[in-house]
Length: 396
Image (cartoon, rainbow, N blue to C red; front, top):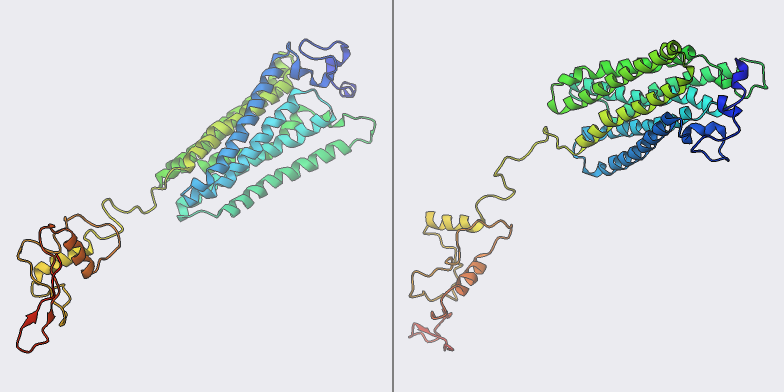
């Protein structure tokens, strides 16, 4: 069996002619990317490429929504959602490693990145579900940087496990002339190396389940999204593990191992986008119903202006005049008693903060008088002791 892994390309290497759709200069390792007779490779490749573009657009959209997020609690979840997008982008890229044929680089990438990328996405989901549970129990959840450190710690566990496993399995053989030693692995060993990822998957489902009936209704959709993502992921993993361990062996077609893993990775990556990331981005700009809103009809300024208050005060206290008394000057009373310096007031509420003085009100009332009425003239006391007053000459 070792000789089967010493030459890349498998059966395609024995053929000197390139398949239909591939150029003559293309290596046999990449035939699945262009071979028109191998439809699954082209289809999975197109779906993965579309996922890469969609993930980049969603990441830009997520960063662009930050200035418009009014809810601080939802703003703290942006870091976890960005982490899910980064690991999902890695899953779409990892799909190409399962499309191309086996050789040392792709085999190492498959064995190491499969568990690392899935554990990163699931660790973010676990911390989000845990935050929802603590928010319901304690009234507030941990801060954003605490959640990021928790997700980083959960992710690093899988990184250490895969690193040790890859080093031990590759360096255990003293043969140094086998360039494809990393490809020598059984299907059961590959699945057993993903036990920690399965634990994270179960933890995401368990932590998100109580949040579906969260006491705060605005957080129930978050728990539902995490739970839905976890259940779909669990179904996909159950399907590909059964097919990878037993199904392909039963039907006698072991060449379907790579397509099985490729379809599982790309479909699970789309589940992360459709069931978690896109709905969470849609909830970012939603207003927080817990924020205090001013009641309807409440204004910043009082309903009655200062002018209106002065007029009411004039009615209540007729003895008190708003005119400034001056011993040297006095105004002639107008013969038309219906005219008043306040005749220009129309009863509308003033919404500005400007407070007019008494003189300004008098000037405004005088400008609103009819032009036929004479403008009152100031008079001064007479200098002759025998006369009462001497009027200044009026100019018409």
